[in-house]
Image (tube, rainbow, N blue to C red; front, side, top):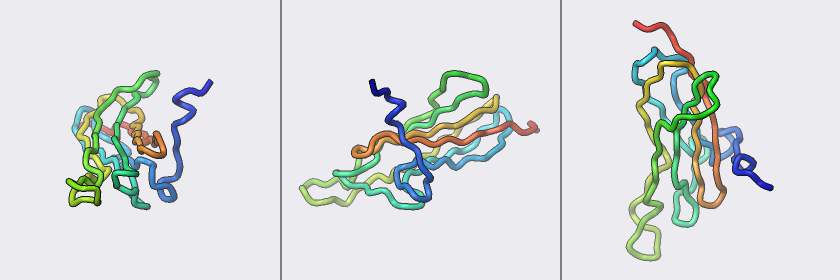
Length: 133
């Protein structure tokens, strides 16, 4: 039997256009908000057409030692070359999202992105805690 986890893909984002790339500090101060950016197609542009597009990006956090994740946010992308006719139109939404989060424990950020043709992709980034002010 196939499981969902067996279909989740990952790769080097510099060579694969579907991998969500997490940009965030490696160390943050406990409880202090910081920005996390997640981009799909950072090195190699992902098509953004009605036929081939990123549907959504989600960001999760797994605290160190935990066995479940906390969903921090999700971005849905509605316009993929949207048009009022059959021809590609003047509006498109790029697969990029910024989340403002704060952590009180170290752990791992996990980004997932869903492509309508190529399925679910993921990447992760560890975040430690530095001294508070």
